[in-house]
Amino acid sequence: MSSATIGPIDSRQFRTCCGRFTTGITVVTTKVDDTVHGMTANGFMSVSLEPPLIAISLGHNTRLHQFMPQSMRYGISILDESQLAISNHFAGRPDDTLKIPFIEKVGMPLLDGALAHLVARVVDAHEAGDHTLYIAEVEYLNYADGRPLVYYAGGYNQLKADPKPEHMSWFDNEVFFFPVSDF
Ligand SMILES: Cc1cc2nc3c(=O)[nH]c(=O)nc-3n(C[C@H](O)[C@H](O)[C@H](O)COP(=O)(O)O)c2cc1C
Image 1 (cartoon, rainbow, N blue to C red):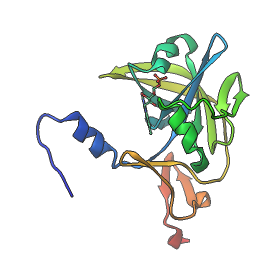
Image 2 (spheres, helix red, strand yellow):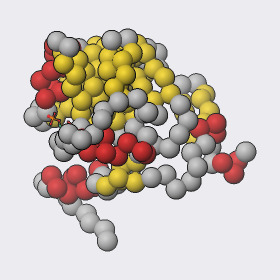
Image 3 (cartoon, helix red, strand yellow):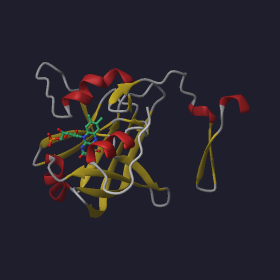
C-alpha cells in the first residue's frame, strides 16, 4: 500500500510517514532534587563531532520537558533488544513489578544493560511547534557491542542480520557505512 498527500498534512499520516524511518530507542533520564525522571524517546540524534553535540526532541506535554530547565543535563541510554519492557515502562505504561536497573555516571542516572550511554549538558534549546529541541554537549559516553531494540512503523523490531560495527569507517567528519560484501 502507498499513500501520497499534497497540501495540509494530517498528523496521523505525518506520524505514519515518519515511522518509515527506522530508529533505535533511548531512555532519556534526568535528575532534579535527587528525584530521577526517565522517558522513552526515539527523537534523538548526534549533531556535531567538534564539539560533540547531541539533540533530543521533547513534547511540551512531557514531564521531562518541565524538568529540563531545572536540570539542564540529561542522560541517554540506547536500549538493548532485551529492554523492550523498560521502553514500555518509560513510555507512559509503568509496570510496578519491573526492577529498573539504574546506575549512575558523572552524577546522572542511566540504565544498566543498555548498548550505549551518553551524559550531556544542555547548551541550546529551540522551540519547534509542540516540541523543544534540547542540544547538549557530551560529557561522558560508553558503549558495548550487542543487539539494539529497533522501532519501525509504530512497533518494536529487531535486527535480522548480525550487527557488524567493525565495518563502519569515519572519514573527514563523514560517516560511510560499507556493505559487508565490500570487505
Ligand atoms: C518508541 C517511542 C518513542 C518516543 N519518542 C518520543 C520523543 O522522541 N519525544 C517525546 O516527547 N516523546 C516520545 N515518546 C512518547 C513518550 O515516551 C511518552 O509520551 C511518555 O509517557 C512521556 O513521559 P511522561 O509520561 O513522564 O510525561 C515516545 C514513545 C515511544 C513508545
